[in-house]
Image (cartoon, helix red, strand yellow):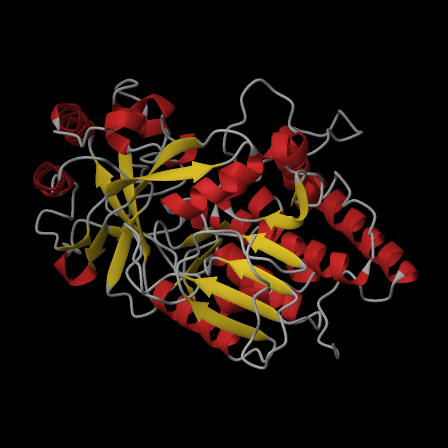
Length: 460
């Protein structure tokens, strides 16, 4: 590491956070609100990435959905736990929310602007716009450069990690202009009428569906070249690749019509494409689950085969990009520190935890653990029964043959003691146990060091 970095006042920051995405923004705010000086370094807009379009902090580039808000779903449980730890970014998401049924979806521009105001308005955070090529020196460094980490700094991280890159492909879904939709062919509904607000749904007959799948199979796809052996993260599989798994695959995946009644027929369609609001004004819609790697000419032609999209104007077409992650269980301890250098923490998708909420969660945890390191407080580990504890355990203790990216899911939680709980009730029981366990953990932490586990803004 080089010379110790200093703030404009001449006092060195106690923590340097590298990367102003979801994880980095959350980490910087978490540390600062615990009373410590932070320097947040972000290379955008001086150097762009292949998918970002602004220099705003916490810009989301793929979907605009933070997934389910239900406390019966792992993503909903995770968000509620983060609220109880006073996550900085979740209120920003709520403030910029767009209607998406039971999901938390955001107006991506409003969200990034809200986070940017929060970061730039925090007196203890100094922002520096520059590309970092080497690990800086500070009492604690949080690496949150994300899955598009650039070459020189990626090399520096890998020297610290002492292992090779792991990587996989990710893909973004198209966005369509609302005014170009044929409203006579689509209908508004949430699956099983859950939640407020409505998705738009494009219903397929069997004949339309089979013709659509045939077109997907014949499409000219962007080749993967040198990284094609690594494959895609399963939850972001391109629809054109899913179609190759069999004729019915899409019907039971992103095009499933279960719980969506077409008012013109009174029945569920044979298949459906859902459109989720992209912004508060309702002028743009995201094609849910329709990430793909078709070349743009074929993509426009084939997507216009979707009922209601015959004359669609696309504000963004789908594309493929590479996401990088590390073999975290081999290189991190249970506080997200590099075993080779415990003053350096890792957060975000580089940990192999995939998803917006998971990225924010790791930023919250890394910020909390870094603040602990500055004060000498050693909290007890998060309970495995919590969503936060389950993803942390996966990212730092997984001992299977190949570490692959994952979201928060029920399989990461310990089994319920009551084996007679019905499958449909399992999520609710896991959620109840998780929140009770987290509250008990918070109470125990407070007895040792009051409010050490909750964000606070106090003197340095």
